[in-house]
Image (cartoon, rainbow, N blue to C red):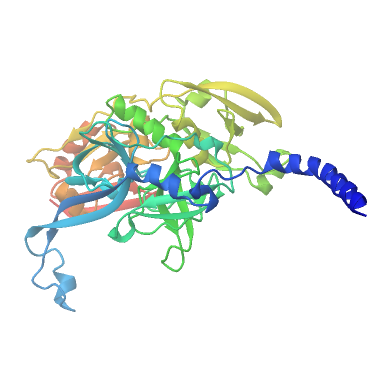
Length: 465
């Protein structure tokens, strides 16, 4: 009986060997206490020193009225009283992205700040200055005078996949550095514009609280995949959808900052478009809804120069699919000015490829900027001739032409003018160039009527000089 039992045990051992070998190929024995406890501690320990707290201060001029709070006179005398300085403070996070002290954060944290202090995890403090700030992207690059700083490596955000584990590191509520975990819950969230940011986002369910803005979203290897910028929530808490600006755009900002740029330069498409939905897809004879259909092209557009026409559908930029205009602009922006990018587009259902030059919006014809002097009717009013560069700066439609207000000045603001207003005529005088405005105002005085256009709506402003 003992011999039989021994034979059966040997047979069971032989049968188990293949199963054990297969298991050893898929399961690795933990080699450290951190791995045994399935902890994020080693990742956080490596990445946390590169995530900093940012304290920004801005002095603004405010006007205080003696009737403030009065239910009747408070509304009548809103603008009465002398201006007085008031300090605005903001608190946020940032990430050191190079050992020589380059820091990235959100524009809404440091934009227009007069004093910025960066506080490291080890309590060291540094003064910082903004090199590049861009409100549309909600990104800013800062510089601190330091060497051998801890920093985070940027990961190519195009390799990020839905379902990946991520950590959000920042300084929520000013209580000190904290870490929250989650997953990447969506990509290409270009329709989720929040705050100042407009464009393409990585979506995560990792909690992002006030003060986390500008902090790092990292993967399980400790590499930064994005900058936390906002959260979309109905309750006001952190249990919502978080958005992070991809590291690919951060990398382009960093390159331009190192090149000495003070304003972020993004390529100009010179085109407008809209996503292709199911109805458009059926009308165009496409197999499925995809891409961005071009609805208008400026005559100087690089897309037009590359052979693309109104009605064509852009489906890929630089080998990546695009389905919204914001996503298309993002793909162009991460390539950088002076480069060329390959675009795949559909024309009458047939796929075609072309190379598009990435250029800045041309300042042609010359803007001929004009500022009215102190003796003019509207002193301080600044206007310019509309061209692609001015159109891009002010966010005007491509088709706009004429003279636009770039700064209304104190008197112009009082009569109702705003930046971006297109001035068509003064009384019966049609304006052709910025230099025509001053003489036309003097000729029309003292009773002046300005015909302007704002947001596609006609506007009449009447005042006495």
